[in-house]
Structures are given as structure tokens and as C-alpha cells.
Length: 90
View 1 (cartoon, helix red, strand yellow):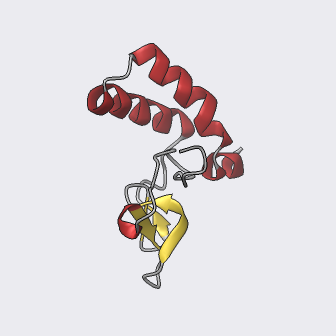
View 2 (cartoon, one colour):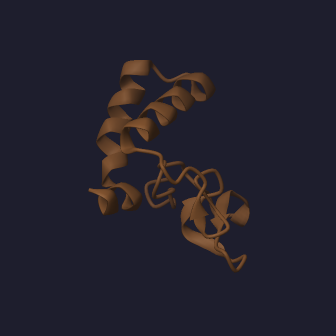
């Protein structure tokens, strides 16, 4: 799983199938972003801040995957700023 492709906006594992990848404006799959973060060549939430992304991802990890809130928050705070979308914004 260490080599699994992750979304460069939210960190979600995208797997080996095309179903989780976002789409470019020409309809090809994005090589960097998942379908929840990116569609038709643009971010689905273009004004989203890193702090908002951290909060959204933390909530998903807690509600959908039963993570402890403090652990989820720590993982998001450490991991998300290293992703392409957020490094570019810094």
C-alpha cells in the first residue's frame, strides 16, 4: 500500500482502477487528483483552504473509517501540507 497512488489534494488512496480518478477537461483521467477533488479539469472546491481540507478529511476519517479524532487530525495536519495542491499554494 505504500506505493499506492494517492490524491494530491485530499490524500485518499485511489487504487489501481480508473474509477476513483478525477477527469481533465478533455475527459482523460487526472494523474494527480481523485474524482471528489477534481473534475472537468478543475478543482471541485477551488476556494478550499488547507485548513478546510484538513477539517473535511478529519471528519471523513472519523465518520466513515472510525478513526480516533485526535489521530485523524494529526495525520491530516502532517500529511496534507506535503501534497501537490497544498505545496503549490504555500
